[in-house]
Length: 232
Image (cartoon, rainbow, N blue to C red; front, side, top):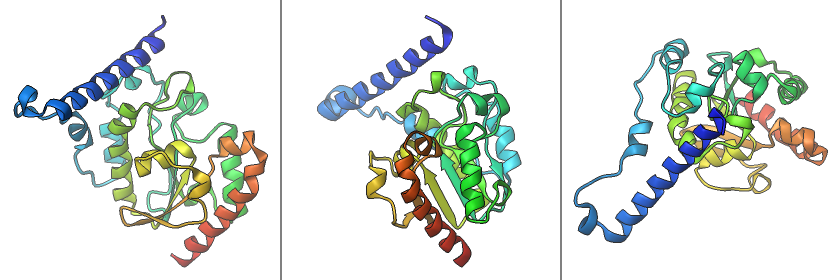
């Protein structure tokens, strides 16, 4: 078993152990656990406040809260306008992103660039980030424990940027932000509130490459985004 597979298994074991402990605590209460509080996830959410994205990056580049920090080539922090009106949020870095240290630079990123151009925007006009800042092994889906540890960083980025609009790209990003398993097709065409920010949901560019039938609804989503962007 190579190092990446071993780390992946270790994360899964830790996650299952946490779930088991919480389940037992719920069943037996203080009879078994006394006043013990399982607050690992709460601690994961606590990070300092930062006055700028650069200060946050300097803090995050040393992050090894989960094994992904030891496996990455580069931390994929985010890129774009630090005062952007709109933040685009994807899932996690892929191989190209891990190598270059920038989100959405592969084929999906090229399509995203064209999507922005179609509504008269450029990468430099918006801010682009992911739920996870490090690449999962073999581009697998993020584990729940990884999202719990990394999501507070994204929340801090949003607090610093103060965007008017969030465009959530794809199932993983949507589920992570809503903290629930939801179907994108049932969320499209609606405006949600995420911590005081208007949020719109659409398909991930990689999904559009695999499923051309999604391109028309995605275009409708972009038109709605542009309308709200211009009104902001």
